[in-house]
Length: 69
Image 1 (cartoon, helix red, strand yellow):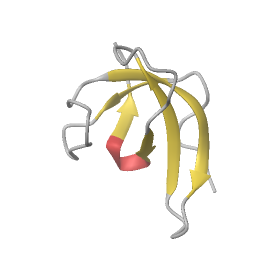
Image 2 (spheres, helix red, strand yellow; image 1 turned 180 degrees about the horizontal axis):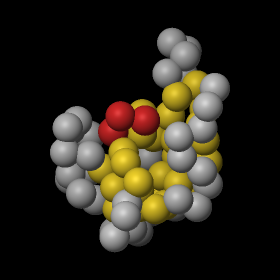
Image 3 (cartoon, helix red, strand yellow; image 1 turned 120 degrees about the vertical axis):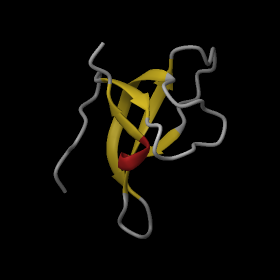
Image 4 (cartoon, one colour; image 1 turned 90 degrees about the horizontal axis):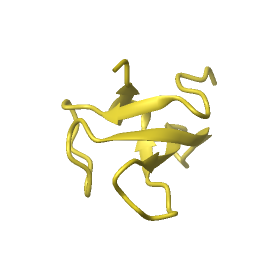
């Protein structure tokens, strides 16, 4: 599996897919990944900037994009 994002990359939630609990444009840092779900889809654990939680939500590759700002 090719890695689209690396640990430490700044990412943001895309506007193309709605993610439960996150607004489009919300930013965070990739903590780990890629991992594969049972169907083989790659996902990443992302620590969100404004979350305040130590839990890192799961994001599929089409739910996040590199944050270039």
